[in-house]
Structures are given as C-alpha cells and as structure tokens.
Length: 378
Image (cartoon, rainbow, N blue to C red; front, top):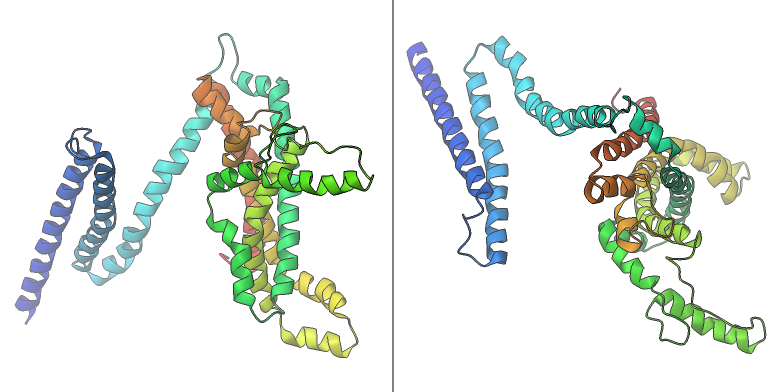
C-alpha cells in the first residue's frame, strides 16, 4: 500500500515538473513571438493585433494557472507540515514579486532619479528647489489644490443626495444605472464628449457645442426682454478661471455615480431600529438624514472622499485631451508628462512624480486608518 502511494506521488511530481517545463517553454516562445516585429508581418495590421492579443491572453491566463497547479502539486509531495507552511507563500510570493518589480522598484528609481539627474553644478535637491520656485509649477500646484478642494467634496455631496433620493423610489436600479453610467466611460472618452459640449465658435456662427447653443438660444429671449443687451458665446475652455471649473465639472460627472453606489449601500446598512425610533420620537426625515444617517455612514463617506481625492490628484487625461494644459489649466501630472516627453527633462519629470506621491500618501494613510476603524484589514 505504501509503495503504491509513493509510486502515485512520484508520478504526480514528474507530471507537475513536465507541466512546469512545458509552460515555461510555451511562455518563452510566446513572449519571443510577441516581441518579434516580423512574426506577424504577413498579416493585415488589425488581424495581427487580434492574434497578439489572443496569444497574450492565453499565455497570461493559462500559463499562470498551470504554473500554480504544478507548484501546488510539488508542494503536496512534501511532508504535511512543510506543505502547510509553503502553500501560502506559493500564492503570495508571485504577487509580492510583481508588486516589487512594477511598483516598488520604479518608485525607488523615480526618487533616485529626481535627486541625481540634476543640472550641472546643482545639489541633490536642486530639482525640488527649481520646482517650488518656478511660477509655472506653482500654478500647477495651485490648480491641483483647486481640484482637490472642489471635485471630491461636490462629488460626495451630489452622490449622497442621489443615494438618499433613489433609496425611496420604485425604479431604484434604473435610476442608479443612469447616474452610474458615466463611470463606465474612460476619462479620455469623457473628455472628448465634454470637449464637444464646451465647443465654441465666434459670434454669428452656428454653435456646435451644446452648452453654447443653449446659452445663445436662451440669451436671445433675455435680449428680447431687455434683460441683457447682447449675448456672446462663451469660450468655456479658454476663459480663465472658468476653464478650470469646467474641467472639474467633468470629473464630478464621472465620480458622482461611484459615490452614489457606495453611499447607497451604506445607507441601506443603517439599522432600521434607529430610524424607526427617531420617527416615533417625532424626528423629521431631514433630521433623521442629517443626525442619524450621515453620522452612521461617516466611515463610508470618508472612504469615498479619499478615493475620489486620490483620483483627482492624479488627473491627467481630462486636461490633456481638452486643453493640453494651456490657458492656465495644467496640473502636476500634465507638467510631469511635458517634462518627460516634450522637454526630455527626466530630473524635473521624476520630481513632479515624487511630489504627487508625497501628496497622495497622507490621503492613503487616512483611508487605511478609517478602514481599520471599521474592522477592515485589522
């Protein structure tokens, strides 16, 4: 009996080794094919891209799965204590390695470049000194601060109102779908949509932008009634500081759905005993909402606020697509891109990246502490 078990175990180990070897071989050849510019030269461009995508998906999903299977089989061949000890590391260490390779290593490299790639004769922190004395960078930081003060607060406020309202209607799911829909659009897609909304043409020409078309149409009535003398189309993306507020509105439009869904779930988690007791005591619905519901879901409010704040600090797509950072709309992320790819100034570019990292860390700390207070990840 023992001999049979040992033989079966040996077969499983050999099979696992063969599977691992075959998987590594397939990954090696597959990656080589994907990196070879002539591998798909005889195909039309779109067919080539489809094949590359399919190969990448198969290699990524099937390859990783078979490697985990082979590794788990090999670990099961060890004594029970060793199996119990090693199995968690089999599944955790690859993830830790990926995080280290694609997150920690680049972060350390970015910080190192920001203090070593300096102008001739400059010290370690000359890039930071230049950044905080450069009027353009100061403008970028100011814009980031404006975004941070307005976008998360307004997104959470509107999301909270929607969450409280849709909780009381019959077609709750349908209403939530309409509010949540913008979040399914990429930032680039949203920027393109709103660029058409904000489109401007000189006075006397047909306005293709929805906002200006409505403004000119409604302004015509105001002129006829003598309220206004004349109505001119508004250059929403060129007029300072209106353009920054117009761009912030895009971010709010995108994030309101996220805030509403999270806060709606939090409101449903408020114990009904609390609200019923308050109604019996004569509290109005407004008092229940502000004195019971909001204090009860303050943890969720903080999570939503900090999550949106982090997204706001990193905002790039919306500004780059709509204004390209012109007309005093640029932020730190856009400045980083320009320094890196337009001016080839890697020291200043990495300095901008480090400034963003330092700005995000306190918000992440607040978020983590709030989650631990709620018993998540404690």
